Amino acid sequence: MKERVRFAPSPTGPLHIGGVRTALFNYLYAKKNKGTFVLRIEDTDQKRKVEESEEYIFESLKWAGISPDESVKKPGSFGPYRQSERQSIYKKFIKVLLEKKGAYYAFDSAENLSAARTLAEKETGAFKYNYLNRGSFDNSLNCSEEETLKRILSGASYTIRLWVLPDVEVISEDEIRKTVRVNSNELEDKVLVKADGTPTYHLANVIDDHCMKITTVIRGEEWLPSLPIHTLLYEFYGWEKPKFVHLPLILNPSGKGKLSKRDGDKNGYPVFPIAWKKEFDGYKEKGFLPEAHLNYIAQLGWSTKAEDEIMSLREIVFEFDLKDVQKGGARFDYDKAKWVNQQHVQRLKQKEMEALIKEHRPDLTNTFDVGEISKISELIQERVVLLNDIHGLCALFLEAPAAYDEKALQKILKLDISNLISEIKTLVDKNQLESLKDAVFLFCKEKEIGVGGIMQTLRVAVVGSLSGPDIIEVIKVIGKSSTLDRLEMLKKHI
Image 1: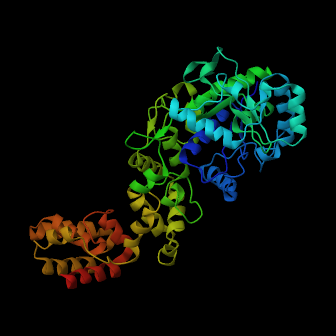
Image 2: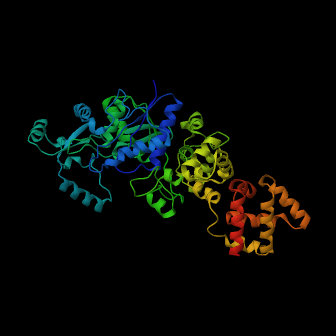
Image 3: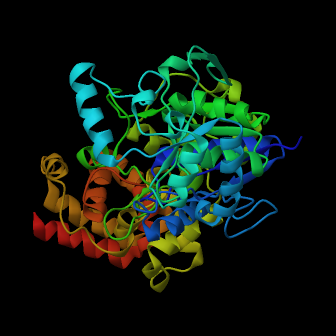
């Protein structure tokens, strides 16, 4: 059977990178097995639905480069792809479940349930609607079929609950955690259909996965406690269960909790792929390459056997195996994410890097020709960590330093700086820039002085600090006139 996987987010806000990782693992598994990657919008909770969220999900996956094979925007043979548009399908299967005695009607009022919950929490610390107490509640198990039908026809409000029989060992299989055994006495008679007639997640996702012929369900660890409920539903319907894979949590840097927006706000890193409205930026706006972002989050919970951890999406697909997904949570490390991005930047082809430079500093084209921009690209590429660094790194080619690093100034002030700058200016003025380095070395040999002092002075004058690209190469790009002007500015500043 052809593999079919699905990513099924709820459109209740921006997509967390944990959601992106779930989408990625589904994508990787589908591509590795020549299967189909489906995006289904689980919007049964209309009260929490945020209109912009669905489009945000699509844009996030598009930026990352893992767009689905089937979706609302690219329908296949298993639609609709929004749960809110599948109500007629659910109604048919809700009826079947009731006939199979897998569910029952519950007429309990919100007030009675609230009172029961309050009392139970006082006495035992937790409330469960299950085999122990359902006999004391207002449901169809406690009245005849005729009375139940009469109440329904009269317009009485009701929900539909899962009918969990006591003392049954519910056996589920997970590809990572293997066999999961739960006694049915520990389970609750979950609400499957809300009072407004819409199914809850538990029922809708099981019906959808069956109808859409999903073969493998890859989702977050937070759904693991729901696995026995879903197993019971598959068994009630008599359907073949898909393979289940529950991915480990992405933990915050301390390892003491799930990575949250609060962690990102506190520590200055994003937890979303792209910007959400005007409220915050994502990895895209921070300057991450999409493949680098995927490369990093792929390794949050998955261990590659490849020698090189810096991988393209195609290489990750080739290496991916569910057997290498770990059970324990994966600790998020923003510095590591940036390092991975830097490695990807360094591997960009020359034309790709030049295109990024033109995108981030379009004003360069007004000053420099194609060959000079190519040289600038070569000089700054290894220094780019995030793409946003390009703007600042290119600034030194366009304008003199706005300020000088104080430690750098203190270092060169130990020299006879005023005379030294004058001599450097003469060297720059009288020599071809292509041979400037040789001229500097010859000058130092004749004067019996160290090369370091001249190079440091040149660097401070041109760049403003003692770090940066090869200073002679920078001078070749900016030209004699600009170099002489910057030397004079430094002299006046001193």
